Length: 260
Image (tube, rainbow, N blue to C red; front, side, top):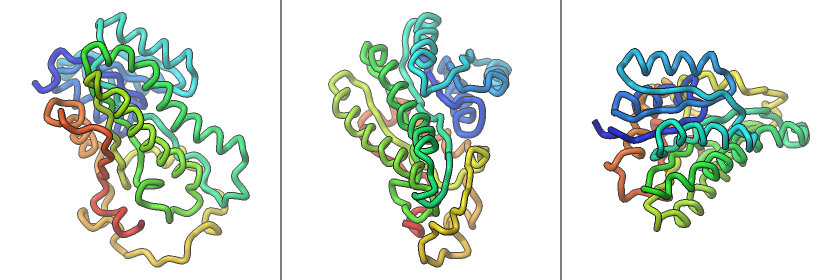
């Protein structure tokens, strides 16, 4: 198996892309720790992995809190003695609204979870990854990287653009230690992240554009599947991508090429 004897730490592993990636990486031989704020969802992920013959455990916590992140990473290393793969996937959509209607606290919540959470994850994991090298994969988005027309998505898009910059800085910084850092930028994927979106007068922030009836050319307009993204995560986590770092990869069926 591609990831035999490797240890993976996945944030937002209770559902959607994070869960699909956790199950796939475990099927390929990795031992997996999943984390999010909802322990119930995490336990379902762990159960699915164990039923498939894999090894996993869950740690509940808030990725925007230093203590929670450091505790989770510490438990991974105490349990398995190493850390090889980090999938910094947890995030929210937050409030989508005209800029003057976004409260500073709402802006802070989106940036704290999406950007601060990614920073804290990489900060806690890096000393362990440097011991033998490894792979970091960050979930960004088409928003803020190729697409700037999503009405009201200013806070979300800024957090996602900043994740790409973070990737590139850390990729260069950590390359001499054999640590690779890459970003995936999904388009519309059939997950429950939309439940974390609060739309408020977002139509007022809509640009004067006409979008095509088929917004995702490659799939006939249908959103992608979390398992398609999981296979990209597996590629970036494995030795098959050993010469790729500091790179963003869009996985959106050409959606962003129409909406940029």
